[in-house]
Amino acid sequence: MSEEWDVVIVGAGPAGSSAALAVLQEQPNARVLLLDRATFPRDKSCGDGLAPQVIDVLDSLGVGAIVDGWTPLRELELSRGSRTVRGLMARPVYVIPREVFDTRLVERAVSAGAHLAHHRVRDARVDGASVVIDEQFRTRALISADGAHSVIRASLAPTQGRRAIAARQPVARTPPARCPGTAGTPSNPTATSCMPAMRPGW
Image (cartoon, helix red, strand yellow):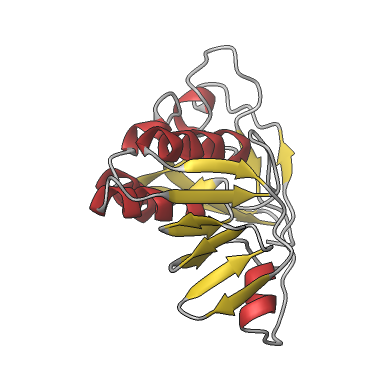
């Protein structure tokens, strides 16, 4: 017999954890289930950069403090060949590894009342006014946050479209006077690796 939940969210990354926080902010007593095939902490190859608008959303969910300990990046530098352009950004951004950011966010969702389960979703079907996931979980509100290869989308709304590939290659950069203060890593006067450089493939 399948378990009944008010909301089931497939995928406990930033989208899923934020959705859980939003639900629980509106309905603190809601039974919210987060399903993810991975155990946390886990890393991802895309999404370390956090735009100011992301910080705004985190603040609205009451979890803006998850960026604590990471130095904001205020300067942007673009280079091609021998040409370099740099300038101050209108608002600071952060560069936080997904292994850290995602773990902090899902921990906040669990602290708010969500239940996190390690489970690889393989199928979903509509049953009347509910959706049944893997014949184990039943809900009237399903949120698909399981990424580009979404099992939920393939099961309930199959489509054909374009796919993209993301790649990340961290490189060491050590501008002597600027590194810890502007690079986006935790403040550390002895740091020698400042920020992940974005390489072709993004």
